[in-house]
Length: 179
Image (cartoon, rainbow, N blue to C red; front, side):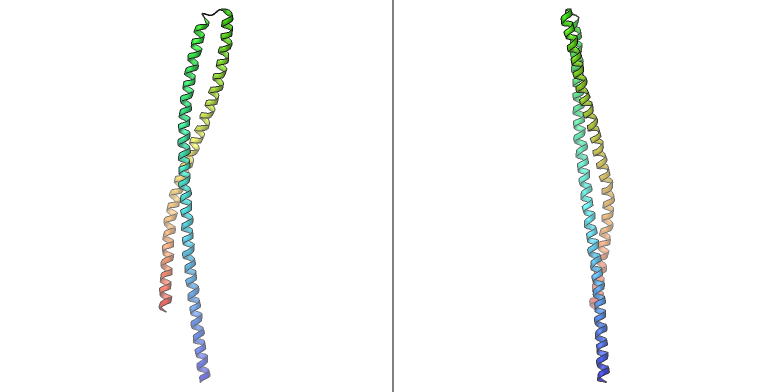
């Protein structure tokens, strides 16, 4: 009888230890799910920070390129006005000059026109580049805003999943601690 009692006691202890081991494994799995959900939430928060940085960079690029472009357009207008005025004055004065001076003035006028073309071409190229940069900045900011909206929704969902995982862990801890 004592042998049967000791075998029964051994089986009861082994079964209890086995159940405790299973409960412990389940709690570990719940904790892992909570950790995984928290890591996912942190990752999404990093993505949101990156989107906000993209928006800032894009807006800044667009703004600075736009200002530079406006300044260059003003410079181009000023250059054209100045050139036209100089050409007009020189043309008027040429009628009063003798032949030698007129030939020199024509050469000078031709050089002035060439310089004007070169300067205007530089400004036009620069304006085009700044327009491209401005569009690139606008595009980057728009893309950042769209991604930000998506990631905020993902964050909301991830926080809800994290909260559910924490609640399941608490329920499991209560359930297994009351046994």
